[in-house]
Length: 189
Image (cartoon, rainbow, N blue to C red; front, side, top):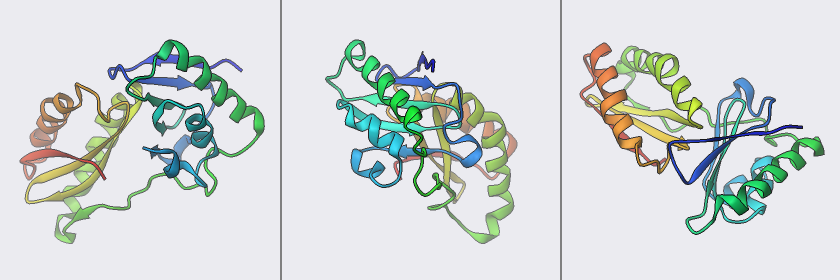
């Protein structure tokens, strides 16, 4: 098994490509601590067991790992590669319950359903593929009073350029295509 590694715009995060589906079309899963992965994802649990790992994000065909602040990728990268390889050789599932992060936690008025559908369509077709290329994801979390609330995941979470991406990229695009949008805000959950 050959696992490729790619740098991301976030220097604390690397993208690992195992050459096979991770979650496929089942969405994404973001684990910000070992306890989040316990009982949910054997793959994420194994990566956290390496130590010095602060976050594990599972995408369609990649695993994004954020190192602890004091960790060094020169030492950590081979250990993470080994953990991912061991997981796939074990035959265990990526997710225990088969459930990735879904559309839970969305906050918007029923009357805004059509506007929300437009926002999600733009995010899914124009934003998320580009962000996934950098090892992350942007998830819709709400729309109230013209403000779109988005959650940054994977390499995007904590990335120095994520605020610029939201304000100058995503916000400008959404405001152009959806007149009801006045601003975009990042949320943590």
